[in-house]
Each structure stands twice: as structure tokens, then as C-alpha cells.
Amino acid sequence: MVEACPRCWEARGEGRWCANCGLDSTPTAGTLPTQEATDAGIRERDWLGSDSKAAREQERRREAARRAESEGRASARPEGLDAYRDPSTPARLAKTWLAIMAGLTALVAALEIGHLNLISGKTTAGMSLSVAQQVDEDSHTLATVYILVLIAHLFCAAFFVAWTWRAYRNVTALGAQRLRFGTGWAIGGWFVPILGLWRPKQIVDDIWRTSEPTAPAALRPHLWRDTRTSALLAWWWAFFVIANIVDRIASRMPSETIEQHRSAITWDLVADLLTIVAAGLAILVITRITARQRGRSDVLRSLPPKPPVSDSPPKAATAPAT
Image (cartoon, rainbow, N blue to C red):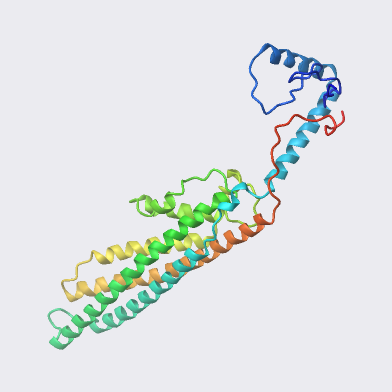
């Protein structure tokens, strides 16, 4: 029995294209400019031109069906969601070492304040031997604690970068499309001179934008690239960059006289206070982004799976009436 065409309801014939209206029964297949395809195109044009009202109604229904299918697929669970990995473990390690580093930095700041009180008003020429010995002892104590702070900084950097990389890899699994940067930039961006002043912030911004739990399942570029980020990210990055700049200035200051030593310690103290604030803000950034990613993952897992795309030709029994 010859199947009826779902558009014109006439016997469609045995070929790929309807013998009456030229409808393609396998529209997902490739089409070559053969004579058969050309004849089918002519039949379709003639059929659509013979009844413009029916043709417009048919096209409206087909567009509505395509839109409904597109919306259904956009609100379905992303196919790559299984690649999502909970960033809680690297987040917990990063926050722990940030807290340790902030605590050690606070200890250094307290020692620096005491050291400044000791050398306040002193000059190199007028300083007594006992005071000079105490200054030397304080300097050795500070040097020891500086080493501990440096070790904590290294651990902080390692775990924070690991968390950033894990969170950035998750964004495609959470439905984000066409990322601005490759996942390697989540690590490499921290170590490239000059570029390191803004690329890591761009990565964290994109993680924030693509981790919104209430955003559509399919995050196309126009849905997330122009989304505003939290002011928390800007404040964290500002304190982080300024603290590093001040620390670089302090490390390059001469310390040959007591006056120069006092200036260098003062700059160190300012850098330490900025670092403590930056560390606290970094902990908040990690906490909020991790919670956003976990929340989005839970929302997406509650959605139905994406319906399969069928390559089979339309059936007369399921086609809309014309």
C-alpha cells in the first residue's frame, strides 16, 4: 500500500519526494542537485502556489512544531551533565589554606606593629646596643614567619587554581555553550605575565555567569556573556591585585638604615592587611560559586532527558491536518 503524503494527502509514490507536492520524506538527509530533486522542487513550488492560504497555514504549523521542539530540547537536561564533578572538595581545601594563610598573615601584621613600635623615633646613629639587638631578634622572628606565610601562599595558590580549573570545566557540563576561553586558561592564565592581571578574573566571571541555578538549561552565548557579575568578584580581585603590587614595592625597598627599614616594614604591614581582606573575600567567592554550581546541577538533574532527534520521515497518521 502506498503511503499518503502528510502535506497534500495524496499518494506520495515510491521515491523520496512526494509525486504530487514534492515534500521531502527524509529532510535530514543530504540532497544532491539531481534531476529528481529539481523536479521535486518544481512540484513543491507549484503546489504551494496553487493554494497560498493552505501553504501559509502549513508553514505556520511546521514553524510552531519546530519552535515547540526547540523549546522542549532547551528545557531538557543537558547531554553532558554526567561530566559534572562536584567542586566541593577542592573548594574546601582552598578555603582551609586561605584561612591558614590569613591567620599567619595576621600574626605577621601583629609582629610588624610591635616591631614598628620598637623602632619608632629611633635613628641608626642614636640607637643603643640593647635596642639594636632587640631589633635584630625581631627581624629574625619576622623572617621565620615570612617563610611560613610563603609556604601557605604556595598551598593557597595550588588549591585555588585547582578549584578554578574544576569549576571552569563544569560550566560546559552545566549547559554553557561557546566559552570565551579554553579550560587550560583556568590554570595558565595565572602564570602569563601581564595577562595574569585580568585573565583569571575573566575566568572566574564566566564561572559565575554560567552557574546561575535559575538560568535556562541550554545557556547560549547571548544568555550568559552579557550577564552582570556580583560586586564581590570585583572587590576580591581589586584587593588581590593591589596587595600583590604593594608587596612587590615593599620587597624592593632598601633596608640599610633604620629609617629605610621602618619604611619597608610599613609597606609590608599595608600589604599584609590588604592580603587578609583579599583572602576573606576569596573564601566568600569560593563559597558562593560552589553553591551556585551545586544548585544548578540539582536543578538540571531534575529536568527530563533531552528527546532524541528522529531521522525517520513524517507519517500521515501523526501529521497535522491541512
